[in-house]
Image 1 (cartoon, helix red, strand yellow):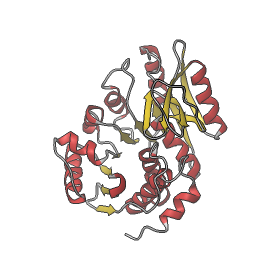
Image 2 (spheres, rainbow, N blue to C red; image 1 turned 60 degrees about the vertical axis):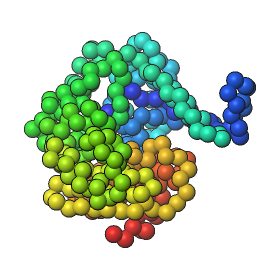
Image 3 (cartoon, rainbow, N blue to C red; image 1 turned 90 degrees about the horizontal axis):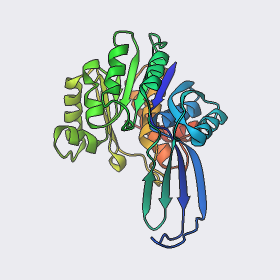
Length: 302
């Protein structure tokens, strides 16, 4: 079973306006609302590809109830932990002459809820996959990712981590199965600016030296690079298509990689599925469907 953890889920409210003027009444011409958060996005794409997963994390208030309702309507399993006070955040994304985002804070998560999540994670078994994705609320310990991985160490659980800076680097001693920074985040870790795939591969290997088993580095319109634990290096140009919505593309890449690996056991095929899934989401208003992923997969010839 695959489990995804989203510490701060959201309702993502995406609105479009012909023109937005600050300080004036503006009217939308299109509105979409869906459950958000990196782990939830991974579960949605896995579900679209036909792979079951369970959503873990925290929710609160009427917005939390709506998040749960929406993911259940998608046919997904959720075991989100209820928090009595506050409400799950709403993230507003405005698309107009310029794109603007306003992200909410989310509820305060106490030690009792963190302990409850720990008990759920204790039920994971050898061969299960855990996805730790995204930022954490300010109310949570900064080392929560590494504490989870320390607790699960030696149990044969494969852990994927999609995080930045210290959240990512703190898990390296516990040898995550796969990590997925983008090229800017990877460069930031080592204090360099990465300008091409050769440099990206070089620093992805340095991340392996820190402890990561497999490293995928997304490079937006410049494609992606992967270095594997058995010494292989794969590079891909970005598939051709019009970018409609980049939100969730990185999460879709993680989901596609995990799906491809579970389906084939082959890193090259897993990388191809990751690229195809990330691009399919970027080329669509919604997250990637299986049909969209397989259509792009057919165009990859490396």
